[in-house]
Length: 323
Image 1 (cartoon, one colour):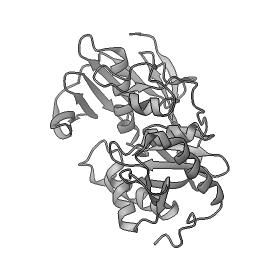
Image 2 (cartoon, helix red, strand yellow):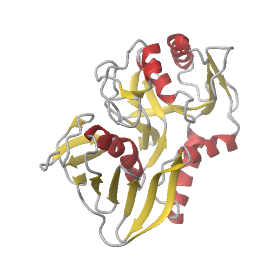
Image 3 (tube, rainbow, N blue to C red):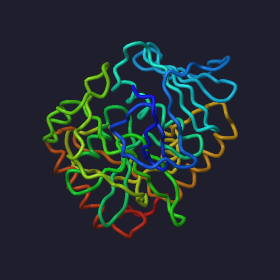
């Protein structure tokens, strides 16, 4: 691990980091940059107030400190996050693999930290030429990353694998690119013609990062034109079945996938909720179901891209009223 600071770009922000982050693109350090340090111990007292669970175990505990938050991944690492100072202090357990620390920082901690002043969704997204950005939201196993990768192989550009940071450009919702990487299970990578020979994501999972350079990456913000709520894959039917989605279902789906650093901060929750309301009012949100057969992913991606290209410039994507 390094002690000198390196500068990188992620979404709409610059990071200066005491550890090398090869997944990110280098940048020039500037004012307002987030600072990432290593081996910083939690300062003062902290109080646990929330946790995420996975497979009946605590995956992440949230603690409140005098000037920010403590995020603890049991038996892996602690991260002290101070949003006002734009600072993250990492304290990994002894001999934690560097790839695991980077994964926790890039794919877990930073999305939560950035949500302090931006709308951040747990979603994949691509830029479709001649159309704009489309995002995919769904539960574990519904294929967000796999579908985004398939589209990126069919002429689209990857915006983000898992962390969608939203802002506005010229009054239009925009998707900010994260970093040029995708995390896939070995069978999904194989189905897409990319045997999983890329670097390991973390020591506790079989997922691997797709090698950089295999996919086209979107380097600048893209206007967000559609949000797709992924239904569980089907065993038959159309390659890409797109249907209208009731307004309440749209909003509740976005609420469920929004990153929130402090679930007890009512003022911030109210701001985030209004951002989500404006989003569903301005961007078509539709239900998408694709076939379960991963061998047909290229055909699915092509069918979806052709449908979107035909619908360019239309507000409802050809499905009639959005309400």
